[in-house]
Image (cartoon, rainbow, N blue to C red; front, side, top):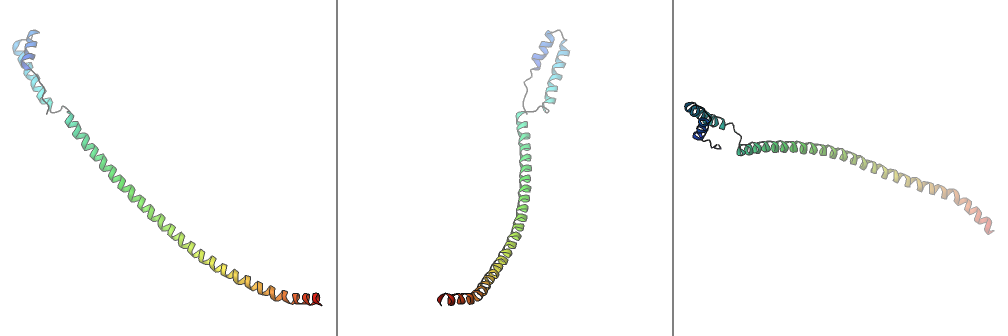
Length: 135
């Protein structure tokens, strides 16, 4: 608690010099000193403010820490959901790639079959043409 310097004797002398009766001046000085002591507890000091601001900063820091933890947890949940969805999509693409590979194999078979059909169809005509040209 900070001390306030209050000189009751000086206060009483000034009241007496102003024309206040001596007994009344002494009583007023004593009452004023008591009022200062009584109200001293309600005086806000720098140390008191520093302590209160420190407490408030600690509360705010704790709330920010809690909020950061909630936000981090929420982002982790969202990341897990996205990862699960992308994994599902990737597995579908793997299935689609397998289907494309099968279709590509089927097309190769069709190309070979068409090649054989064309060769078997065109070969007799080519033989006739070569016979005509050579003879």
